[in-house]
Length: 384
Ligand code: ADE
Image: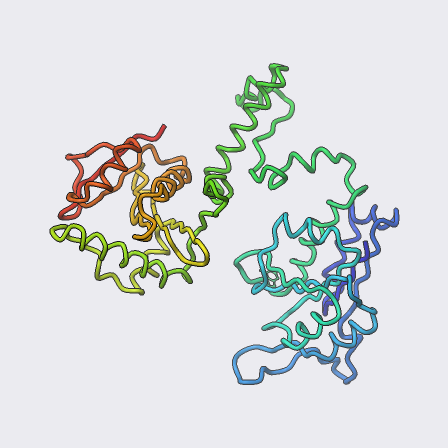
């Protein structure tokens, strides 16, 4: 695989020649070339940036050096140009696998406030383009991201790793769970013993223990990776973002209005919630939603209150109620509860028979000892 890097800090990429990538270079598996973007400037100061049109803080990287660099490096269809930027799509193991199948990656490392948009538009005409972000934080420049992406990609190349099995077993590999805890000698260290099962020699028991630990760890640290996030027909249950606030409010209102019409005596306390209210609670509550044909049709939220997983706002579009979607959303929000939760708690309208029936079927019991909002009853269930 050929790897090119366009940067104003070539020294930043020196670690590429260390360790395993270094060996892969010697063996000819990798052809790594680091280029100083300033080589494609023509003024005395070797200028690569300028002030933004339209005003604003910071500097923008000029288009000409990148354009000349792409020409000089003979970037062509079939190559992939990777722009590392905090506004890119999130880089993950799946993207690493996609990049690993490319013959050539050209990394364009941004600095300052970003690169002139025309560079990206031009790049899309001459090659495949990926704009990638390492995560939701801002680095000083794209070099560290280019290093991280390189390391994740090249270790997937056939012949790069000594032991191919360790590629399958590690976190984020095929099963999409985090890796189980690992131990080595000595058997006891600082009075801490290695779990007995790992010394048993019983491979089936060891595999079962590791699978359980993987799931436990994933549920605790990354509940978003667990499976209940897919309905039987393959529709994903997704984590809500602030951009969903408007649709969530609309769905809630539709459900509350339907509830009010069916039970005129039931009071719906939160009916007067505003868009700003929804945006604000979205920051505090873990919220999930379901879309069908681009329409938001279901939602549920929860947060930890002491050792109780406080569940609420379970709502299904009025025309889809009674088809089991509410039950699935309830199972999902229970499944993603953090390890610290020992029970599930929720409230529902004292007069809404149908909701109460569903919760009873799901194992919830009336809690007269717990206070709820006016006109509502509190239900709870022990976590198993
Ligand atoms: N450049 C600056 N911040 C970045 C990030 N989070 N990911 C990729 N490139 C970046």
